Amino acid sequence: MAEDAKKPTEEIEAPAVAEAVNVADAPEAEAEVKAEMAEATEEKTTAKAIKEAEEKAAKEERKAHAAEADEKPKQPVKPARSRLERQGKKFQDAAKQVEKTKAYSLTEALELAIKTSLVKFDATVELHVNLNVDPRHADQNLRDNLVLPAGTGKKLRVAVFADENVEGADLSGIEELTKQLDKGVMNFDILISTPANMPKLGKYARALGPRGLMPNPKSGTVTTDVAKAVAEAKAGRVEYRVDSTGIVHLGAGKVSFGAKKLEDNVRAVFASIKGNKPNSVKGTYVKTIHITTTMGPSITVAASEL
Image 1 (cartoon, rainbow, N blue to C red):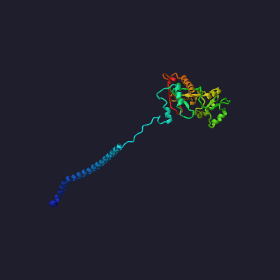
Image 2: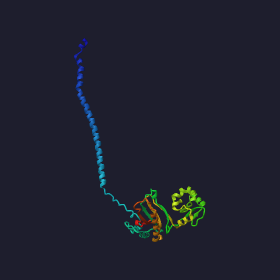
Image 3: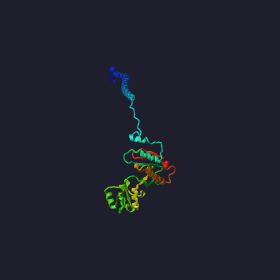
Image 4: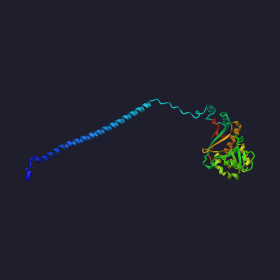
């Protein structure tokens, strides 16, 4: 205690003075920290502002380029040509002879079809009848066959899957036909068989079916009277059925037949279609009828003709 009392007054007061100086400098240090933080914030804000300004300038530049592109004159767009305009000159000349809004009588339509035939070969006269039927219903899935009075104008090769030789047949004999079918050779247009021999054709169904050559009772190619079936096939037996949209497509003869024979064939087809009208069909049975030749213009026939 005596020693402490002996210490100079300056030594005792020095720490107190230093502490007082530190307390006095604290506000200045805090002010410096705040200034540094404010400066850092300002730098960040400035960098962000510069980036936004650059993006805005780039956007304005893109808009300016787009406006310049819009101001350039656009190339004129050619209007799409109609189906008739895309056809050849001969077809267009033939089509001008047909009134699209007129429904012709059958005689007029056939005479006009012959007149507008363009091809050099003997063209087929096609008949297209749109019926008010739904093929998804079994009773409305129209199918039949008939012999055209004037024939089809085609030379058909008829084969008979039977042991006996049939007059008029181009090919007959089970053994001979079996050898050809095993090789995948089908040199015939119509194949006729007896009911007893049909099981032997079963293994060839995948080859014959897609080609429409598989004998079928509905088409008259499976019968016990083979000679009669051959004679009818040679005379011009045709088969028709509605497609998935309810339309019958059928070749009614050749242009060389003349209007009279063609009319006889078409009338026979009309009679068959009319006679097979399903009982479940109510109201209008025939929607439209069209006649045309191979590669020729279409001609509308009055539905009342059927």
